[in-house]
Image (cartoon, rainbow, N blue to C red):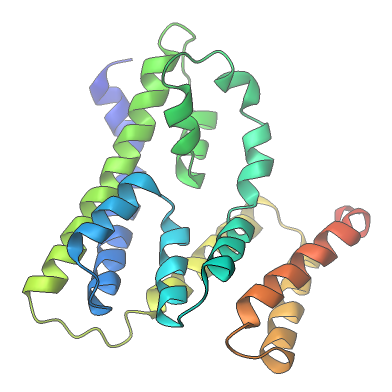
Length: 222
């Protein structure tokens, strides 16, 4: 598979990652965070929703423990779809660890849907992952730099995190249309806003949701 063919596969991700990366960079600059922090976060963390979540928790002065737990629960889905690529990744060579690190939802979707021959698997997997990460890095750096050198009205930009989670929720529901899961999530979210303190609402709601999903898994899957 030629590089151009691989690039064409990743164009949909490019169209999503560049704008979202810019939103992340702008949001980080609105918190007076130096632009290079956005760059290093995108290089060494590379977790779009996780990076937005980190900024929101920084803004509320959350503890490192709260940040770690929230990030873990947010990315818990990686455990499940990671299981479906174990056999594919086990045959990879030196690029295996990087591909595992860069396995985002979008990269996973490309790797599972693209027709990739065993001969070129290492190269193609690496390039798809690297290209997707480069889009996110470029977008976040553009946003962070622009936010630091150009006057910008940041009012409402924090809603990008809410919008991101809404889109992710819709896409997840479309892929797994289980009304019980959706209803449970809505009920826990509403109850969390009413019962839990605002500063702890996210953490406690995630714990509650995880408990119910594990405890009532059979009922949910029926």
